Structures are given as structure tokens and as C-alpha cells.
Length: 83
Image (cartoon, rainbow, N blue to C red; front, side, top):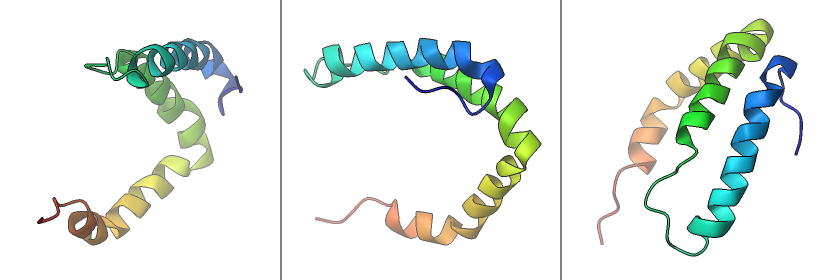
């Protein structure tokens, strides 16, 4: 597994990666997954990244700007299709 963008987040990323690979191969691919059991670990990793690496590099603001710039497109393409 690859290292995290923020070295201080490597531990939680490794735990998330391990959890996700197990969940994906043992449950999701077999269509037995009711929920994503790794969501709490992903949340911890995302929080670590947001507080550390993304903020230090200014990437957090770029992500927010991109989301704001694409709100109309998201609203158009994310609505349910009429069949």
C-alpha cells in the first residue's frame, strides 16, 4: 500500500487501506455488504489529511473552490434520471 500524502497520517491510512481491501474483496464483490464498515476509518484519515497536508499545501481551498464552481453541473448531472 502506498504512503499517505501526509506522513503523520500513514498509520490511519494503513488501517483504512487494510479494512477497505478486506471489505471490498470479502463483502462488496460478493454482494453481501450492507454498509461500508470502513467509513469511520476513512473519516479519521480524511480529517488527518484535511488538518495537515491539504491545508498546508492550500489544496483544501482549491477543493472548496472547485466544488463551488461546479454546483450547477453537480445539480444537473446528479439528479435522478427519468426512465
